[in-house]
Length: 357
Image 1 (tube, rainbow, N blue to C red):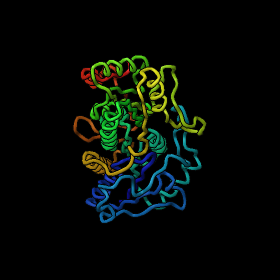
Image 2 (image 1 turned 90 degrees about the vertical axis):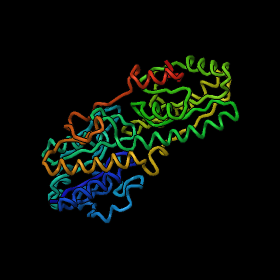
Image 3 (image 1 turned 135 degrees about the horizontal axis):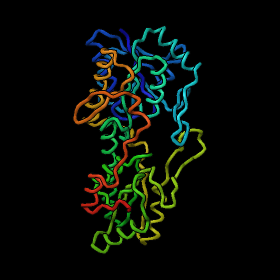
Image 4 (image 1 turned 180 degrees about the vertical axis):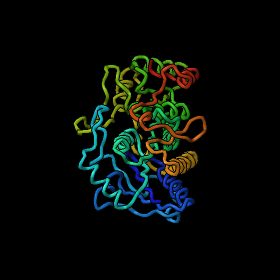
């Protein structure tokens, strides 16, 4: 039995842990694992791949990124802008399928986010033996309670806020930290709470600059002369706009710059010196946390289990501390968003954090 694995979409801490889990579990069954390089592109003739043996995964648990490489561009891109989906052309699918057949790959494990799994669903519907593993630092896939990489991303936000707190206190400033989160504010909310933020702004909760400014003024009057503001890159301005770097990329728009906008508006409204900082890809890099290493490894083991049972067209899922699976079609295009009045948001408000509403 020979199975394949590829990483597709953005990188995140824990990808190598999944590879480790897949290779280890497959070896126990006497199977061989083919790792395709640079996502789906590695499937195109003549094929760009490597045979993965247990000795090849020794020591990779602690490594960020992925030893196989990944891409969110190329012939298999599923996201074409504003959430729209594009099918992979039939000739590209046919070429990739020939590689699968020539290598005698009997199952293909796709480790990716919503876009990559959408491509995986198309391939499954066309007869491919597909198994999905959810991957996104945004933690916004509806069919799983947590994705690996999220905990590592939150930790980087907390570290950033810890560092900004000291400089904010020294200068009595407002510091704005822009974090990732295109559609969902989980990184902002978790990181903001854990890092002691005064204000957290997210895509799910409409906010008012005046209310945020008043919150900062009230803190100032109470003797708190510095404030930390966390804003997700996908937070929508009161005017209804997203802040983008380049809206004409031909795919999903590149978000970025909302932190600077928020900082300038708050400085004008509060009269307090305000600076902004963007974490950007620092949230994707570096060694995964122990939680992400273990979760990634468990996801890889479960993917091999699904292959051994012939349960294709399913995605590994984590619910109630247990790793199982759900149909891929139930997982894609359904985002898990922050509930504006959910328990976590209410807890944040209860301890004096302003969510902008």
